[in-house]
Image 1 (spheres, helix red, strand yellow):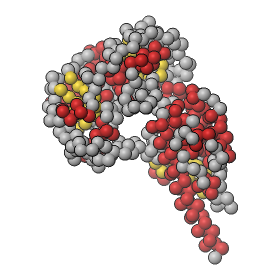
Image 2 (cartoon, helix red, strand yellow):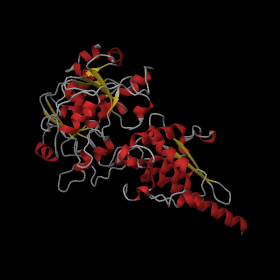
Image 3 (cartoon, chains in turn blue, brown):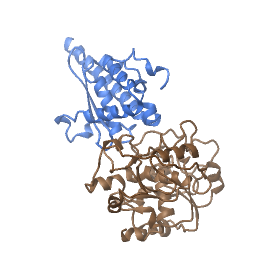
Image 4 (cartoon, helix red, strand yellow):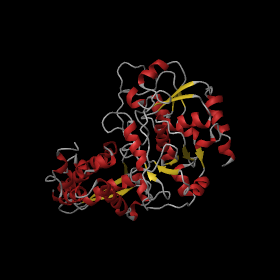
Length: 164
Length: 283
């Protein structure tokens, strides 16, 4: 829950822990500005996802439409790649996606799967945006982990078949 | 003001984007933006507009209730609003949260509070000016006024007493029928039961709005609420939805656009009724 675990960052991946620290270093009002910056920096979709929102997962926990795609690469680490799409009129949703992109994109699948489910509450945002609105980021994280698990298992199975 | 607005029962409650553009710098006028998305204001807002957050500014952080008179006075004062200020509110999502803010201001008896027809989307679509500059606000002195929950607000007990009299459920058809426990495309709100309050008529809020988020004309609204639903302007009506935001929109339509004399918004709505033990539910 928001209190207690809020300042403990030892179980977060490094990039996520650093970002959480940035959020805690500033006032509540500045946290919103930071979230806004992340919403602006959220990378747009690569061409291969253009016009194919139907191949992406819709995150229903967000109050505004957000689409998510997760790729797990064929390398030794099973590197995770995250892609998001949300409209400019939904900056909070984009900001949440920005936090997860900055924190998790490019990490090995194992590390993404180990991210604690309450990680969205470690950024000191619940007070600034109201706890009610945090559900969107919790939903995004759980869907990312579910997709990584599926794809990671598939990669492992492929590798098993090749070596057999 | 436009002919469309002049035709409403209380035309002084609604302004057009053109009117607002001309009156932005007027003394005695303060513009508020009230959105669902807590960051949207910061991406650019109408020049001079102040941000009012439905959740962090108008709701009590502990009790499920609105702020008290003291906190309300502080929220208004900080935004440069006095008791006689003309307040114009606009927001995202066809003005749901703007209507909600207007309704909460009504609980405190603020006299002159209006909506911008079409809300934020219409202003943006017309290419009107937006700015990220923080407004220069001189704090005003808003008096501490007691909240009056009797005239336009209904509690669960009031709704139980009201059973058998006119009630409007403004949620989507799926929520009304009980197939869905929350708005389509919206997070699960966790109601234990689906359905509607017995006797409620299903009139989804969006029927009162045009594609561009502006309100339908008085004639069109009368066709829906009076002719089709058989309501009458002297009826005692309760409106509800999920947490009272969409029903604020309908409350505004019935009260200010059609001139109903007694409409109460049940803000506990389905997140309370659908979780309450022993209350009747219809499917």
